[in-house]
Image (tube, rainbow, N blue to C red; front, side):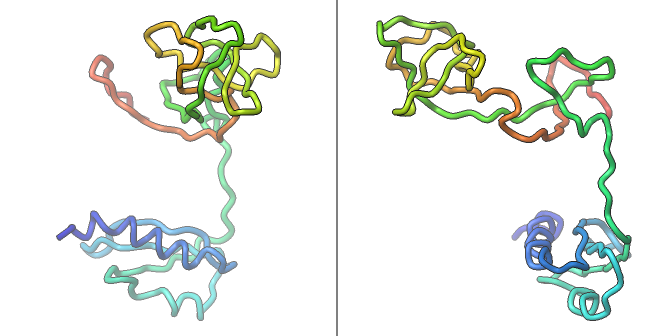
Length: 180
């Protein structure tokens, strides 16, 4: 049987989904209150009916409601994100990125092989072909350890900017931990 701390995030996300349409709702968090794993609901303003509906408990977890007022996200350097294809900023730190990828078949009309990292565009049939056009759409997986043959299925890494930035922390055995 899972421990409460293993389930609380899933339950908090369910509660957030239920509350999301209410204008009073701000966000949901998870923490500890008086020694118990607790779901915290943060509100933008006091609404007695809203508070009464959620204060006390939800699916076996205690719930505490806190009024924090209007929420305005802070803008930080980290919010600007990593821009692959651009030199790192002077204050850049170790990070990780999501890269949109899609499987596709590489095709060359003359049957030529191509290199990993080749810039490609999508054909009408969903396959990809090498291009030097400025409106290229992705690159062939740069980690492919060999030439790519025409007709071979490969991963295409979509051009930077295809997905929103998501900051990560990560570890590697060859690198010291970095506090974030």
